[in-house]
Length: 133
Image: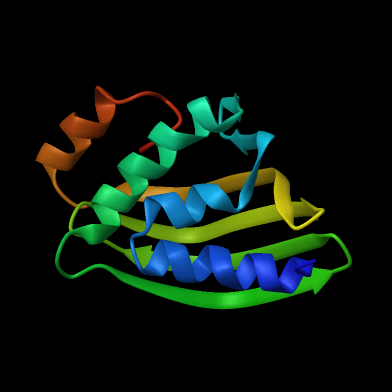
């Protein structure tokens, strides 16, 4: 069975490869993803979050910088920053709980700053869980 580190490494690789199916394969069917303002329960609710995020990170010029990664038993934590064409991500954090080789719970939060007025307007119309909170 994959370790927590194995699952985290695979998850980060799938995200970096813009592989939605690979990202989603890391989650248990009843996983919960806590994001500012709400929680997303199950793959049906988690999928649109990652679709939007991967679309943004697929645009030219995106960069991702891992600043800290820690694994302890079934828990993992990452601290990162990123730049996309639309946003700057500072102090972005994810915490994961992995059981039986699958992510069963995750939290995500970041300070997200839109880069343009157009991006600001775009995020104002998006669900509260993605964009400028």
